[in-house]
Image 1: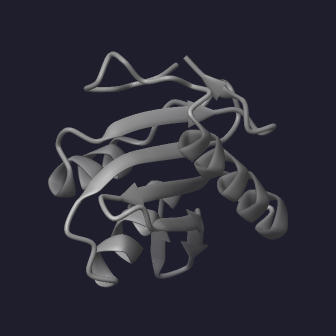
Image 2: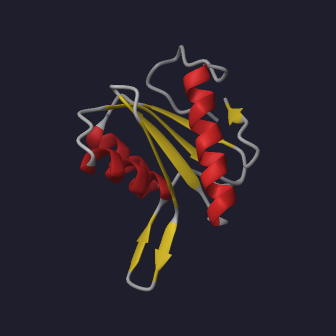
Length: 117
């Protein structure tokens, strides 16, 4: 499922495929429940996975957005969440994305990196 404010999003866009590839690699490396990648308005990419510690839990999307913000990104144009097909995007992660970039495209991908639309 693709959640987008831009109905012209193409799931085969090379930049979106790059987000899926990076998220897939991060998830495989860390064995995390989810991974996320965001692209800022300058084309830089930030990738994160779910963090679950005794004192802190962050979704992959929350962390990827925070990494972009803490690196000085002035805006985000796209975000991708990679996880199991039956998982819905986490509300906190989507809210974090919308705080920074209300119009950013939000994509979902399965564990193989296939972008669902």
